[in-house]
Length: 80
Image (cartoon, rainbow, N blue to C red; front, top):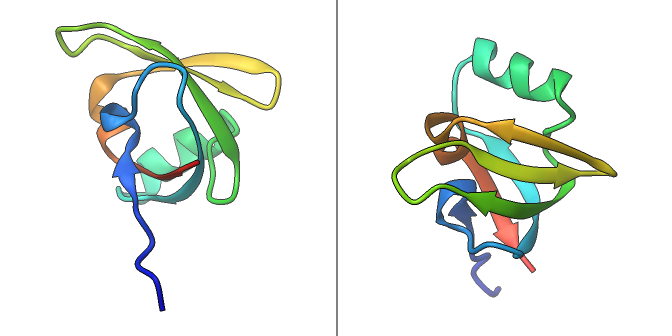
């Protein structure tokens, strides 16, 4: 069986798309991201990020949201 390649949202390149596999954090983090529409199975696009660990802007459905770099490190994505 082929290995599924995953990375964190923070590691994705600008403009790259992928599917959220899991939120590797506690219930509080998972709940906040779920309220923003970031949950397993959702397709996201990384719009931009700051060089020095600033916010990461992503598109979920037709909405752009900003998440902190620390949050982005906990979002596990399977890139397209």
